[in-house]
Length: 94
Image (tube, rainbow, N blue to C red; front, side, top):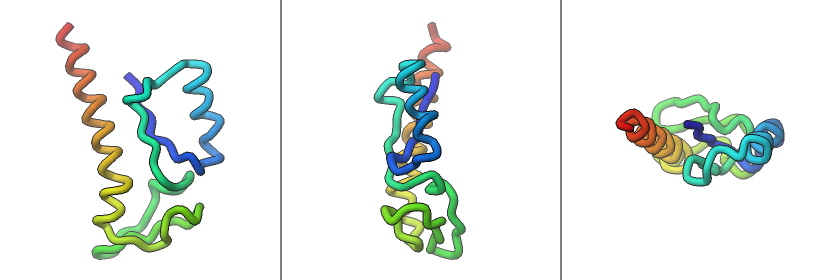
């Protein structure tokens, strides 16, 4: 099972994302997570209650609260992982 987290402003990963969609016809829509940001969105440095993001787009502030980052970035990723794990367990039962 394949899940894909992608960033519409990520021009570096765009060709790979399109290859998955067009050539492999994967993953299905419910195993995709479209998140705000660009190629460097997963990177950041946490100091206390703040995260310093790498400024690759203007869509994400350079500094944001950990809670905001968790809600907009980390929580959707964890939700996708949970969905994939549930599907994996269902497939093992068959």
